[in-house]
Length: 231
Length: 356
Ligand code: SF4
Ligand code: SF4
Image 1 (tube, protein in one colour):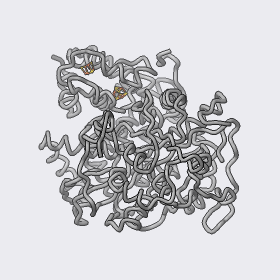
Image 2: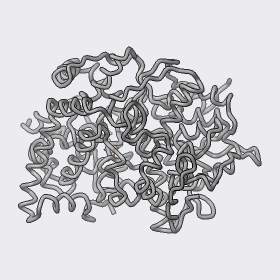
Image 3: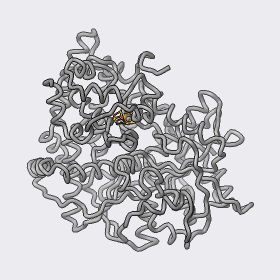
Image 4: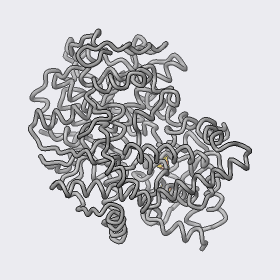
């Protein structure tokens, strides 16, 4: 039994998501990520249940754990009622907490993700919000998306939304006291700490890679190697 | 009614959905991409059906997308959810309805986790008290907004101005339904029809005159995948899932797609556009795609609401072929106008796929 496993086993998602895995491969057969990436949830489940720290550490530092789409299709199908998707979430959290995420290309995406998501929540109270959803980052938003971006007030008004307005309604301005409560929740429950860990580890890695943190963030957001793909 | 085959299996997975008095929380994605759908939902349940759905401006994101992108820890997401429950409790409600499948999946999971691990619930209560001095009761009943439309599908059918029927030939329209993974894949008993035969959208389609298409990749993910879409470098994952679904449904020649989750209609609509622009391929006839709708938009069309009030102009794939089949009247010149006919410069048109 290993120390990394012991720590992982404290996570409720492992308590709930990994009983005895019989390595049947049903999860891998149903998994959309396994079709697209060089990814195999069955193997990950097996590594975790063998409690081998060396292999677990390799997972935490590698790209594989970042391939899952968290669709949880595997949960429906597993004959043992396991949840590979939940075990992946626990591995990812541990990889971030231990600063291992910067060792892999897909793990390094945690900087743009954490910055963008946390800023949206703390500044606006939404995970996704029109004022920070830009066509230039999302060309697939399409010509209509570009039109919405460029005519935001008029379009949302036409759709009956309450963009930036006080009171209830879609896209209302969430009152400052509610945003303050979210910030307090972030402080108490570890989200603020997570941002600090991600920033600090990313900064070190950016230096090591000879980039500014902004260049590092942009590269993590934009670039991917073909090696991940299950071609 | 005598049910046979799959209909029989579907009919066996029912859940009792309370009639009235709900605490309503919105979806970040639905508000951003389909705000008119949430308006339509409230217009139907409050305006048409006279039900009590209460919304407070103080509710926020559930944190679900950030959580599934690993941008916040599990405890943060659970404590934000606890705060939402506190708002429900303070406002005197016990039934909780959310407009998002990611939220619905998380609320379900959180409530199950707290039942299984009471010490976790205690920890979250402590967190919430420390951060906000609030306390909460767990909802007596959790619904997704589509469960409510499903429950009242026959009342909507009774008021129908248009049906999911080709108004010229009388033939039922062929409809693809897409449930969204987190509705029932994790906790099948919590969704109408379970994970195998989800009936929440199929029930609406049948009640409004359409015919449900069963195709091989019916239960496949739309491809959101959270970080697999949010990060530009990963979006091939997202698009290839949508592609797989469209290739699978194409031979069945669907007239339309109805979706449950707020994200899925966005992906199924926008990736059709990208596939067309990159490869020239469209899945409808004559350069059109297959129009994709939220269930609120479809309910609104059935009830005779104006297509542009429903927000159908924000779709990239043209909805007009479907409106023509249903016989829904619309004014093309009004499509891209603002409130009171205010002129807005219309969007550019894509190269390979028609958007009106
Ligand atoms: S489906 Fe379940 S039992 Fe089979 S390999 Fe996957 S996790 Fe293990
Ligand atoms: S949750 Fe992850 S491992 Fe499970 S089926 Fe979805 S992508 Fe695959």
